[in-house]
Every structure is written in C-alpha cells, then in structure tokens.
Amino acid sequence: MMLAGCVLDIKMTTSEQLFEKFCGMNAIQYERIPTTDDETPDYAITLCGTRVIVEIKELTPNEDDKKVIQKSKTALPGECVCWGGTLGKRVRHKIESAKHQLKRLAAGKFPGVLLLYDARPYPFRIPQVRNWQEFRAWLSLIHHRHWCLAGAE
Image 1: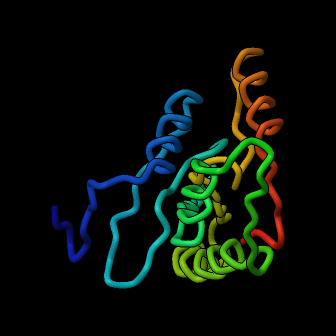
Image 2 (image 1 turned 135 degrees about the vertical axis):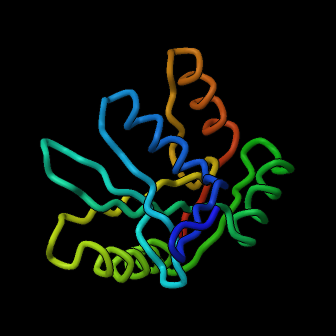
C-alpha cells in the first residue's frame, strides 16, 4: 500500500509480532512507521503522553549458526559442539544500524529505543521455560550434550 511516497510492508518479523502483542496486552498505543527509501525506525509508541521511537532488530540464525544447530542434532551424548567468532559482532552491527535509523526520526525531538530480539534457538540463547517439566527437559539436554562457547557473536 502506498501513502505519500511511503510503503507499508505487511510482512512482519516474529519480533514485530511479539512487540505488537506486548503493546496490546499492556495498553500501549503504537503505530507502525511507514517505510521510505531511507531506512526508518519501525514504530512510534506513546508512554505517559510522550512519543517514543522504537527500532526493532531481530537476531536470526546465520550460516554458521545453522551448521552448529545441525551438528548439535547429530552429536552423541557427551559430545562437545564448539563454535566461535568475535564476541558481540552481530549485536554491535545491529546497534550501529539502529542508531542511524533512530537519529533520522527521533533527532533530539523524541526518546529512541532499540529493542533487540534473539530469535535463535538454544544454544545461542537460554530458552524461557514455563514450568518445572520444561526446566527439567532443558537440564537434561545440557547434561547429555556439552556446549563450548568460544566468542559467540
């Protein structure tokens, strides 16, 4: 859909869907910011009468992550699956990218927020467990497979 040179992209990432759900559940007013040829932030929200600009960045598995995931599926109990990289490299890139997007719209007029959502599976992030059974299952996974972390991105 076109609006005065802007395009509303109806494809939403998991992080955007969860953000909108969170806002709805917490009665936070939000509006999707239309995209332009220049990179723009994703949302404007209103908190206590103050407009806040929000950029959402999502970490998804890259090729290296996918290799580790595949190795972990075939690893024998007690086998160590290792990977490495420059600590924080991907996160720093997301922050740098968001900084420019937020400056374009917030530019000292509004607070700007960067929301980072890690959509990668375990072992790249610790899973959220909802009950004791899920926690025990997670502990069992750790017990049967050893993960080595050498500078995760």
